[in-house]
Length: 265
Image (cartoon, rainbow, N blue to C red; front, side, top):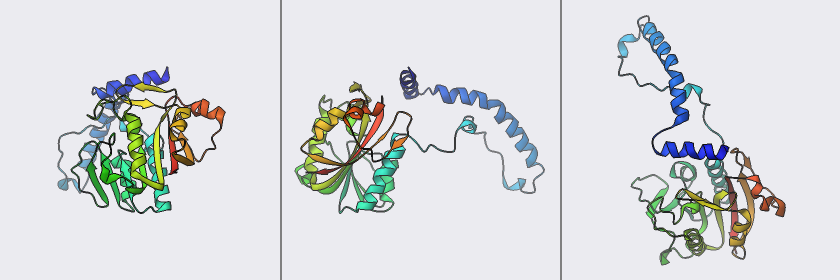
């Protein structure tokens, strides 16, 4: 029920309606009126008032009810965790596929060069980041055995669903995994994160993978060095030992996030 309500909220946000922010903004109106009147009164008592004119009001009504930032959730934990590992292992060439530029990629670019492949073009020029447009459901020969470190964080689940104007391909995630395997050198590190829970497609947002199914996809291709996951509450469980019971229960996740560090065999 809780997950259904959250999905309805996300759908409304996609159409420009944020019910939580709307309610908080309505509650915030009296606070705004009280504060602006007090601020204007203080202006006339200040010796600095001549340096500031009043522009048009720009009401921010909901943020007084928010916490001072969010240090939880899939992206916060995966981006920080994998960036830390790349800093530690210091690969020669690190290539990223489709991860968040304003999260993980930016973290890595703060201390080293990173190459980014994405289906969507990016015009930005940023130090330490090189962008290239590519469809990873098919691999360019120039990328074969290209790098010794590869990341794909919270991206594989979208392959072939058309969300990012990519071609509709039911098995697009398999094509993507096959391409990544070809791009990574033998012995190279593969950092992968995907949603986990009861296996399903929530078109056209994403796929959710069962742990048992993922492990079958990795068999004979990779050894798993470290496994971590983010649970439904957004908390990180780092370097977890996997056992059959937890695997079959998907670590009690409905929509969690599995984070794998693997070595190509």
